[in-house]
Length: 481
Ligand SMILES: CC[C@H]1O[C@@H](n2cnc3c(N)ncnc32)[C@H](O)[C@@H]1O
Image (cartoon, rainbow, N blue to C red; front, side, top):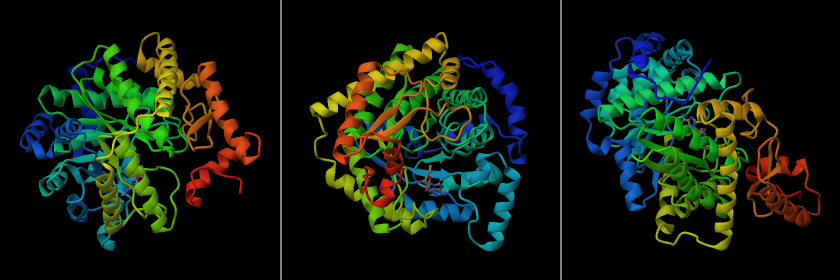
């Protein structure tokens, strides 16, 4: 499949959408014009991009949960229960819908109705269709985002946009590599170019729909340069298709200086690469995902992890933070647990928001390293694609130039190995084929050697294993004893 980073002609999109809409009966008759009209009818207070822009201006940190259950009335009840404590709301989509298995999603709906409670791990928006989804938008006073993990979300986007959701998470790389096993990168990038083109069509009608590439990826020891490179590539692909409102994300890794450096450099690097590509008229915001790794079972310990992620989001100056719950280790949270996570986050942000952001030499050095790493990756990606970022992305994964640690996708190279240093910052233990400059690689090695000396062991793979289990054992760095 030939792909290229070129704006899809509107007519080409319109010709292709009939097949997209035919994938499930609720797609029949979905009209962009009618969807635009409905979006136009919404008040500013229900426009995701407007709320984000206001927060960027006021340097506020917005808080947003994840939430989704099988049936419409229960989902509305859940969001109403959470909306007072949230600045922005989600609709987390179920796993069957993410795999385009709408027949299974339908069975889940039927069984949930019979059981009287949700038997799906999210909201099956495609099966419910536009009218039912609009009941959510009508019932909730704040903007609502579709959060999911769908390599092919073209039908989900058509229905969600027409139903009044005006923020949509995901991307052709970030919803493939961590979420799929055998989906061709060319296909998922192409499918998401169509989603971004639909977003661009709504934009041409004056409806801004926010797009949020999925920052955390595998959520396991992902070095900032890896997630930033993918975030920037997906941002560039979206801008090319006419997207205007972009939120780039990053998953908290645990060392505060590194996480703050990551968030600040993400904004700097996005402006750099978007500007170099000739884009000026875009709205950029950032999102920090609270700790995406293994959570402690104990709810009191879980609240510490949630609070930690709140402080970091605040000091990093993130536009929004995605909130975890004390049920993270056990599964889908109750609405009460979800609300508790929001309250703990709100309290911590309010307690620390007026304090200055860090601005120390260590932070400057960490940011410089991330800039150098991302520049090295992006240069290699542009070279691999002979200037085309879409082609370059595919070739970069084939060559291991971009390599996401612990990702399931077959198209991921899987040779780069991260490990924490003595302060818990994520460093590169094995470069694989990532083209990091030698002096930057030496910086990583030196930082790892510091930890090895403290732990009286050589740098070793066991450190990586220890780090993966550390937080669920109440630590950040996986110490040997
Ligand atoms: C990206 C993975 C994250 O999404 C969370 N998640 C997935 N489905 C739901 C759900 N239905 N309600 C609340 N949180 C959810 C999960 O707990 C994990 O923190």
